Every structure is written in structure tokens, then in C-alpha cells.
Length: 160
Image 1 (cartoon, rainbow, N blue to C red):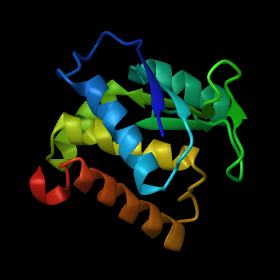
Image 2 (image 1 turned 45 degrees about the horizontal axis):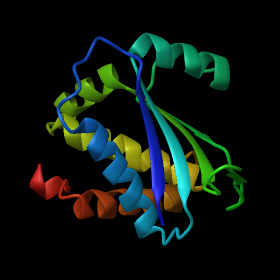
Image 3 (image 1 turned 135 degrees about the vertical axis):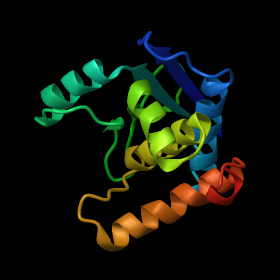
């Protein structure tokens, strides 16, 4: 399995900590490993500010507010388009608000690195078909998987 993670930082309000892009790549890889994903894959991660994620959320989801992360899966039921030049499966796009990530890290009392990793893992699970909209068991399963990946990255709640 190889994963190409394209990362685009389109915001200037937050200086990303050194190693953030590497951490995002590791979070993508660790999520796919946990899920037993064996194909080559591609993911695009775009880091934006609150204004831009608000606009995307309004345009794409009809929700008129900023949010922390948005996921735009390109596949359905485990079926993905293939990049014709590489053969990699194109999983989709992740959009993270750096401003909201910083606020949430402060709010939850953990590092910005853990917050970026959490948002990336959370979004990767959405790209793989997981959902939590209805809460209940689906949300619990997703939370458990998120914590397993964060633990594998050395960012579990107990190691903040």
C-alpha cells in the first residue's frame, strides 16, 4: 500500500507547527493501515482559514457557518475512481480550518498536533464510508477507530 497525500496550505492566519504536513501524511497512512486498506491511494488535504471553510460549507452543504473539517469522498461502498496515470484509488478531499483547529486544541487542552491528527483521521474515516450523523453505534465505532489511530501515532488522550 502506498498513499499519496497532497497537502495545500491556502491560509496565512496560522503558522503551522513544524512537522504538521508529515503528521497529516502519517495520520492518513495509519488510518488506512488500521482499516486493512491494501490498494495504493490518493488523498488531497487543503488547510484553510475559517472564512474559506465557512464559504465551502455554505456552498457544498447549505450550512451557513464555519466548521473544523469537511470531507468530500470520491467513492461509494468501497468503489473509487482510479488515477489513470498511477492506478491509485482516489479517496477524496479533506478540508481543515487551521483557525478552528487551534481553538479546539486550546478548548480540549491538547496540542495542535493532536488536533490536526484527529481531524485528519476523522475525515479519512468519512472518505472510507464511515458516518456519525445519526450518533449511536456508528458514532461510537468511529470514535473507537479514531482513538486507535491516534494511539498508534503516539497521540492518545493519555499522552497529550
